Amino acid sequence: MRNYFTFNGHDSRDCGIYISGSGTLNGAGRNYDAIEVPGRDGDLLGVEKRLNNIELTYPAFTYGNLGTLLPALKEVLLGAVGYKRLTDSYHPDEFRLAYFPGPLDVDPTAKRDAAEFDISFMCKPQRWLLSGETQTTYTAAFTVTNPTAFTARPLLRVNGYGVLTVGSVVIEIPDDIIQNVIIDCSTMDCYTPQLVNVNDKVKIYGNEFPTFPAGETGVSFDSTIYSVRVTPRWWRV
Image (cartoon, rainbow, N blue to C red; front, side, top):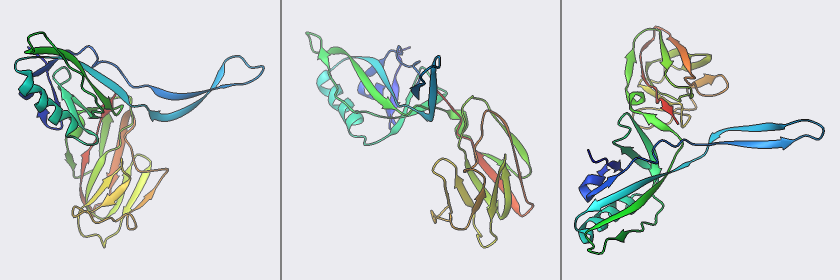
């Protein structure tokens, strides 16, 4: 099987491009500030929670009419602005968010009908699990289990009003909101399906928007909340 990637919905095979996966197993790094203290062995660590972006390079190759294939590839890679979804056949259960900064340097064979070259993307540190995109509906108290070591920031869709408790975070949804309320714990926004912001109406008590840390998190809610739909957004590095 020849392996491939998709970027922004475009399959590299449609451009006659195939890849090897030697760079797909690398992981992101974390920032640390090493602080030297006179008279004390070792460094103290100032730890940042953020993970760094990572460069992902695919060794790529093509056989065929480069005059036709490469312009199509350039359109796919350079026509996309900002982060886009990136998948590959080596990891069919996950995806990344990536952008292509360029350039694209191609050295064709003497016959100019084949080439080997690198395609390098800059990726956000997360390897998002496809299983984390599955939305589950609950009509009574429940427990979610994060299968990774990394804290997830879910998308919650609440039908009704009252008190919703996620772990140690308490959320109050007033009864004057008659539509579903979407709580995006990643962007830290509350809004309706019509994209009307209701941050000023929904009250959240806790250090921040709710999360799903590693292990189990309990979720409960008042009887006036008829259902809670959860998209957990699991990820790993």
